[in-house]
Image (cartoon, rainbow, N blue to C red; front, side, top):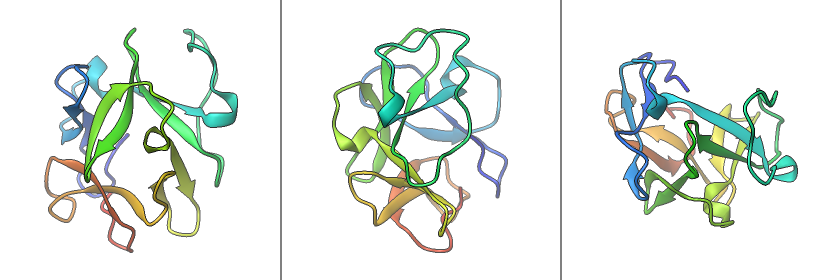
Length: 134
């Protein structure tokens, strides 16, 4: 997933639970590879070769770290982190066509955001506005 302002990608250093999601230069490493699964279609465990891509407007989805781990995007406070799948709505996301943002399913007033007006490295969720920087 790429920030359109900077060209930086979502990344994590490793898949430890609670690991913060950062923005970094694309290196093609496993910590940059995520896969989207819609909540209604969430398989027990995704298998290599599943064809799932793009967004369905308003449908909740999960974002899972690729690479054999069981880590999903979540958030603590406003910081985006990876956690083991837990079924909480904080691990579900929705593409909002009207604002062109990825919103929290738990709190629809907040969207993905790169700190520092898109110039920082920390991924967070923040109140949705026209300057989401992602």
